[in-house]
Length: 61
Image (cartoon, rainbow, N blue to C red; front, side, top):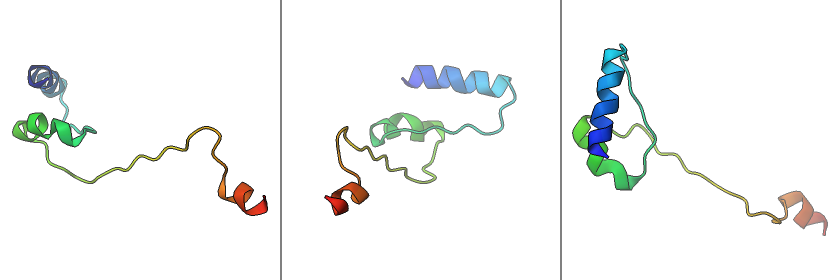
């Protein structure tokens, strides 16, 4: 994965990119941090399982 990132970053530089960002899991930190990436913020992802009642449905039942 490091080799791929180095390749991609090289292409970005040759294309004139001035900023490169990515979304990554904590598991990727060992690859991305040595390449100069730093955490900006954290994103939380939520999912609602199919068939789950909404708050409005639960209150009226």
